[in-house]
Length: 186
Image 1 (cartoon, rainbow, N blue to C red):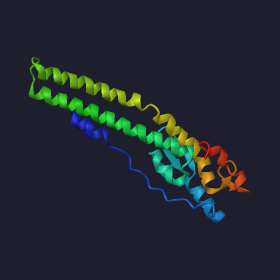
Image 2: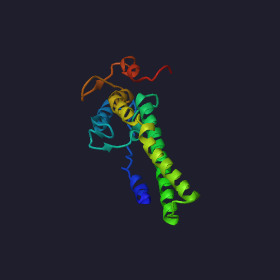
Image 3: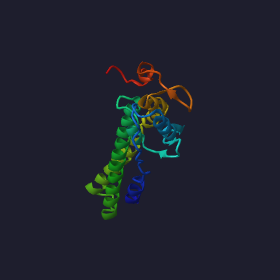
Image 4: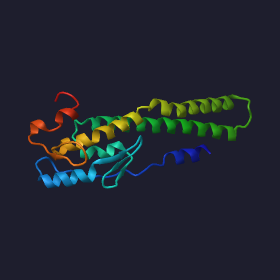
């Protein structure tokens, strides 16, 4: 039973490989087309949908679209680290509970050290499984931060300005939205 839960809990959505965006020196028409294709249109706590219909389940899949100093990169990196921590804790906890089950199957007697070892593994496994969501509570707010900053980060990367779904070319680099997406001094 615990092995079935372990295998079932590792199921996941596929990662998405996004094509790279043209840089700021590309013709304006290319940058507009790229923006219209990958701009975020719907964002939830766990996934995002881009204008071209691509569904993004993993925030780090968006990294090729934004500058390394973008808040999107910082939040996506935190999401990836928290998700990894979650899966490690869940795997250890389910493994400990599976080991407890194996001990109870081979040593059904409630007497002796094997029973207490099994009981200890069961309690430790359950505590570890329960700790997973608590230790990774930043996933939802950080995922939301990725979506909230994605549009401005895309515009910055492509050298586009303006509000709404139809950006305009930034008149100069000085007026590009760089200050809004900067994560601090460079």
